[in-house]
Amino acid sequence: MKLFAGTSSKALAQKIAKVLNVPDLSVEQHIFPDGERRVRIPEKIVGDSVVVVQSAYPPVDTNYMELFFLIDAAKRSGAEFVTAVVPYFGYQRQDHIFRDGEAVSLEVIIRILESLGIDSLVSVDMHSVKIPDMFTVPVRHVSALSVFAEEIKKQGWNTGDSVLISPDMGGIARIKEIADILHMSYAAVEKNRDRTTGDITVTSVQEGSVIGKKRAIMVDDMISSGKTVLLGAQLLKKQGIEEIVVFATHAVLSEDAPERLEKSLIKHVFVTDTVVVPEKKQFAKLSVLSVAPLLAKALEK
Ligand code: R5P
Image 1 (cartoon, rainbow, N blue to C red):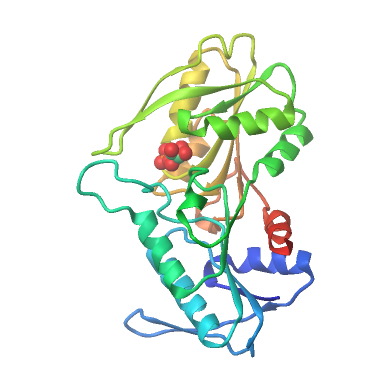
Image 2: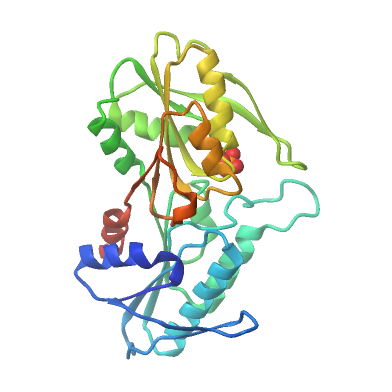
């Protein structure tokens, strides 16, 4: 296996390579004055199984273009089997037409990747479990829930006075899965999103689910603006929950999400390294857990 890291996933690729005991090979990159990018794989890879690691978080279009070029470079250089590891798969939330006239952005990205000739794809906590079925190549869908469950146990939060909460009904399968691992109770918040403005409202949490509970552990696939978990936290507080912690796989952290979360009533936020959190977006309440061992395991299969 020859593993190459794109610029959005350098540290994660290094960790994966370390677990797999393979070299993390470098790619030549050049950005021209007009912003266009040239990538080159200097290594001989004819007949090899090549893995390209590049996450598609913001700037999502730029990171995708680099991924496309890396795959093309690998194919043209004679790789026999190309696996794209895209830890955060940008555009996945637009997985169908919500309103007439919209593009299905996710399908566009999938078509591009497949037309470039990827042979398989690995990604982490995709927005819906149905997304892998939209590909014609095999997809290994890795879940960070086992990492979250370990941390919850380490913190001693897998107790009767804690409840696992999905901040929306869309995350119910996810919350059931982690509740099964931890043998804990769970519930979901009822959330609505205005499709035109993107505004979120939360209305309720399943009746009776938080009675007698002291701590709520919210689990979600991603934090972008942070509004979903913040509104969920406010609702839970009103229901008498004393302590709220959040686990979310992808730390997209758009706009002023870091400040919003730091100042909020949420006690701590755990994310993974599918998205790199730059220094200016880091905040005291944030901890990053690694999914590198899970990705390495998926690549071994
Ligand atoms: C939505 O369905 C997702 O699971 C997340 O809850 C959502 O994308 C988070 O976005 P934000 O942080 O902007 O509320």
